[in-house]
Amino acid sequence: MDTFTHADLVFDVTDTPPPSGTDAAETVVLLHGFPEDRHSWEALAPALTAAGYRVLAPDLRGYSPRARPAARSAYALDRLAGDVLALADAAGARRFHVVGHDWGAMLAWQVAAAHPDRVSSLTALSVPHPMAFTRAMFTSTQALRSWYMLVCQLPWLPELVLSLRGGRLIGRGLVRAGLDEESADRYSVRAADRGAMRGPVNWYRGLPFDLRRPVPRVAVPTLYVWGTADGYVSRAAAQLCPNYVTGSYRFLALDGASHWLPECEAGRISAVLTEHLANASAPGAGTAGVRTPH
View 1 (cartoon, rainbow, N blue to C red):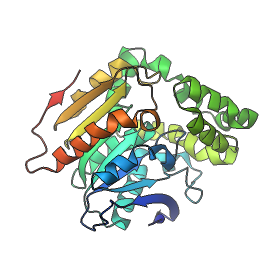
View 2: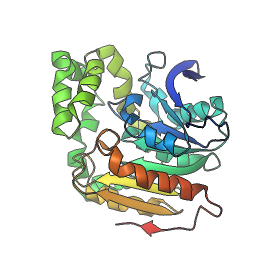
View 3: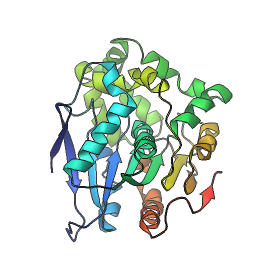
View 4: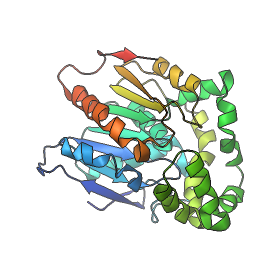
């Protein structure tokens, strides 16, 4: 499967079966963040397929060229969750594991909370439960780290700034924040095109719609991974996360890791991720299990 459709939008997707090619393989859906794309998972996906999973990595709404609605309301989390369910339906996956990074993690929390009947497990990289993130805005330095979210509410200006110097300005910023240069260069190409950046920025512009519909607590088995050197997500936000998970929960703090976990920390994440997926599929998995909030 190279594409799937939802709400008259056409999404590009990388569909990688396990080496055995079995149709009975469990499915893992990988959701990228800003300003990434499905290629951000290239270092991590091989470990999942080698473990026997079918891996689906889409370019999300606003990123796929044929899936770029203009209205900011089209980027509310509940609408974005519909895209994920449409992908699973197109793949014939009644249930699936969902893994998300950055904005993709926000979306993964929404999907797991609102559709526990479809989700076998949740893995969130970098970004905690949206309610933990929001609470930390008022109780820690998180608001200072997230100043750009307010700027992104402005019309056209964020796209203009991101496109400066052919996108190289944001590329240098990403490298300073810990991203490898090859990935930063790839994301800079999109940033140079203001039209192509409207959709990605609209994820931020959709935030006011999300505030009206708080994300519920998550009941499915959950793994949350955060880097101690993450410049965008505070330790306070990370440590509030277990308050919003009612099922089994594991927290992994990667010492010295930056925000860019899929690209830069795949080696340290792959083993614990595959273990989490296997445990979530074991008989009796769900509300019972380890809880490591700190």
